[in-house]
Image (cartoon, rainbow, N blue to C red; front, side, top):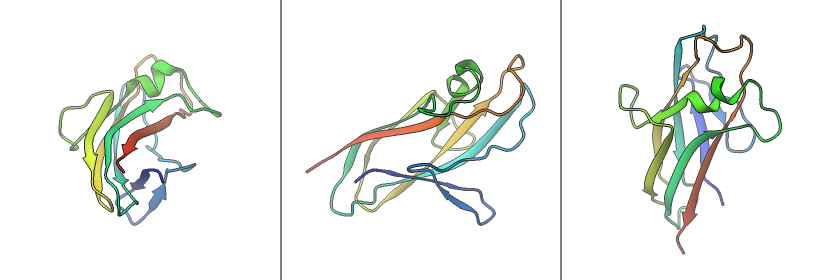
Length: 128
């Protein structure tokens, strides 16, 4: 069993990122920022998942853009207006429960124009 990562675009569209989905940040001009909400769910109703770490990493098979233009300038927060950091920790997530965090992608002014693609990685340990 693994954590589920789901992007809700706020307009009725729900996209599962758990295995191979996409979160579309829209068109972002150089030097601009785009934010999106990401729901993290523990689907195992019988076990707690602890030590959860969320981070942006290079896409394992289809990275587009440099590290400095994509995953190294992606940050996470508990709320849209909260403090952002490059990793996000969730101490524990009870079985069957969810939490929503925010992702902020800040495209540098000197980034290469074009598409960017990277991955969001979630790790944690299921307690017996």
